[in-house]
Image (cartoon, rainbow, N blue to C red; front, side):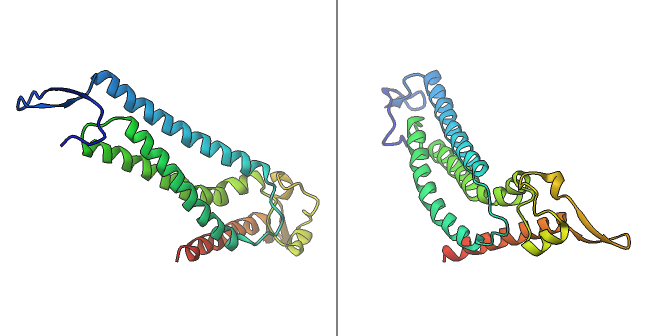
Length: 199
């Protein structure tokens, strides 16, 4: 069946000879599909770029543990953002001007799936990879930092805080381990807040 929103010319069907709607031009249809998907990808690139800029400009506090509340807040933010981007995906899929429901639904589902992956995984990627890479020294409580002698280190200087406390030739305390444990703990707190807010 032809979609009700399909915009085409009336012509005789090559299959059964009945009068039906057809694309004005197959090349123009393909160009619309490619163009709409390029716009969609550019919107996604803008979204990621804006969040990268925000992430790079916000310097974290040392010993910050408010990740459960942050997860709950991000959950609300993702609902708003996803619904906004879902409208954009629907408008762009309509602009592709698919004749039948099946390619229309496939295109729309692909866009929605990409939105879910990008929007939902962004925060986890930020906590697990981007934040430790941008500010490797922004972890550990004041006692640990004092014992390791890294209180003076800038938060973005990896070489400064990459130290170990040794006793009798054995590593007693390693800042790399402190950072790894903090990253995992922060991510768990974030996910817990995120999930609880969805109940």
